[in-house]
Amino acid sequence: MSVNQTTADDGVAVETTPDARAAKADRTDMVGKALGLLVLLGDEPRGASAAEISRRAELPFSTTYRLLGSLTRDGFVDYEPDGRRYHLGLRIFQLGQRVSNHHGFAGTAMPVLRRVTEQTGEATILSVRDGHHHLTVNKVDGPQMFRVTSDPGHLGSLSTTAVGKALVAFAEDSEREKLLAELPLERLTEKSITDRDAFRAEIEKVRRQGFAVMDEENETGMRAIAVPLLNSQGHAFASLATAVPVFRLSLEGLEAHVPLLQEAAAELAARLPQR
Image 1: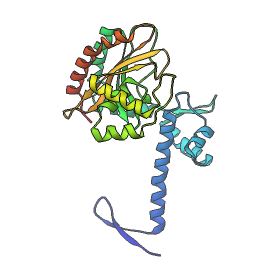
Image 2: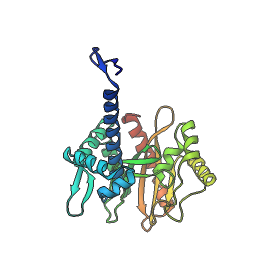
Image 3: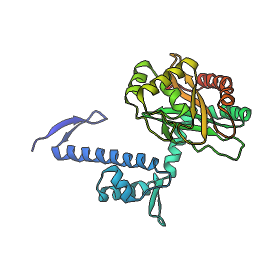
């Protein structure tokens, strides 16, 4: 049997065998699989059964069931016995709140979002980019009965939303070109842009006018307008939006809120840590 020497974190040399290295690699792989299950559960607001998660993760049922058991024991996942469904647990919420506080989204951003909502009477949403999606990090609902469904933690399309278009349009040049070439163009409604040339033209329009519009492209009956939060290089690290149901405000009326959003975005860009 061959034995190799490696150096531990404390600088002491330790001997490792192929079996030990394989066991360590297997543990690392299981951590990755467990994290993958959490990501899948994040896409299931109503929860999912172990069989459904196993199928989506392309893992053996026994492996999935064992990992879900460990995650449930540690509070990262909740199990609903009646429906035999798993949901993200409170431990994930606690960690998410810590991340939000670290980036200033909770303490710093919320007063600004509340002020915008007070002046518009509509929902105000703050999002960042997460790969090929936008991630809602804060939202303040308006006083009206009709409620916007993009809650904090929601992952949404970059191509069909105002916040997403603003993030794409004001990304770094190389990143924007990559997104324009590779971004999945989902058809979520009849108005969704699914042609790549048309989407490129839309993004160029957003860059020219300085704001993005969603007019029932992401959800029938809803429209929104968004502006970027720009860093010192002029690239978006977040975007800020006002969202309304179509029966309550016309597109022209919505665009009248652009100066207010731009003022709030500039204030947030000066206060928030820029990723």
